[in-house]
Image (cartoon, one colour):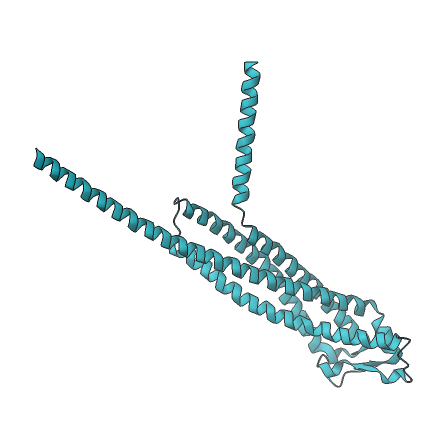
Length: 285
């Protein structure tokens, strides 16, 4: 009976120790940085993956329906290829950068907790690193905000083309001359004015709207726009986290300086009191 009781007690202590260890590990997780990292990964993946495929589909659609001469859209092909390489770079950079910010969140969370327990003191270098990441994240947020606005341009163009085709197919449209309704992509500067044919009208336009290239590219641009927006939100979230961490670290440094000064003053008062006691005892003797 005694051995069973001891075994039960040991099992209870082990389970309690495991529970406390799990709580301690979970308490050290920077959940805000983790949420921002997941949002950043999702946004960048949607923007880069969908944007890459949408650009390829757009080039195929232009080659088949709006610019059948290779020399007319050679510049556009080069620009799209450059954008696709930029997308590769964006995906690689943000994958590494999000991991670094998540690691910085783990480090700062641990440092702040140890600061509160007076077991650890942050260095000037650590605070400067946090300030540098805050500045870099601010620049990246502005850059991706510009990318978000740029991504809205093809969505707007495809949306106008989609609406034109929908209006032509509508039974309430009452269009007497469908061939007079055209979409001229040359006016957007996508291809030069001497491109052949450069525009699509009537039934030809309706057939283009029914192609898989148009349908897929249009919806992929929408998803890429949503991914760019999610990335902007993630970067703003990172910026708030870094600003809060920097403020906490600065406040912790001020608190430690105050505690050091107070401890020194207490020690001086205690030493002065001891010296007075010694003088009083010597005078009585």
